[in-house]
Image (cartoon, rainbow, N blue to C red; front, side):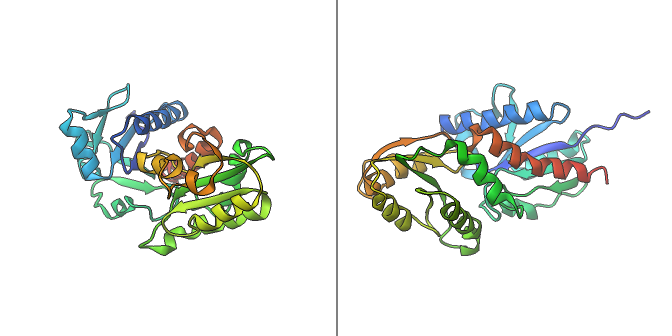
Length: 263
């Protein structure tokens, strides 16, 4: 009897050159390898500039387990060379259409590929993800601001975030969602936070991998940062990579892709 190998799970993300970002990714990798022990887990860094910077420092392997760091075309070629055929592609993005999803158009000749979906793509995901975040919301004496990136050039990409902001405002008091760029933006949340009369604010980054630019924009000391505009005693929480409930929801997309191979 010929042994049939399980599908390779291929995670596509933008990539990072920062230590904290690498720690975020490695924690996600540990979650994945624990949940799917029989599947090979591979990673694609979609941004070529990030890949080049890492390679210039001699970094071609990721994490303690030393998995290859490649672009998608090279990863597909490597899988073909190894005789692997079934591949479950999963994007490490919160919203559909994030930068990097152009890889959907990459030819996958000779491979049987199933594609997953972004965290907020499923119809019930906005309510479920918000409820998963709820235990991290601050108490009655503190404003909670969820922060992520919006999109100025492709407005439709902001729609899930606009819906999430509306859901949060409807169901919670003094909890708001803000975006750097795009909608819903920051102005409304800043104004409402200041109107609350509270003195403290807790920021929850809505990123799988937190970049330095995001941290600087939230917690920096320049006049245009969120901390400066809100003007309250501020703390910042960890990102989504360390939130088990949110990660479980995200991995449902992988489960869905893997189930399609048996249909």
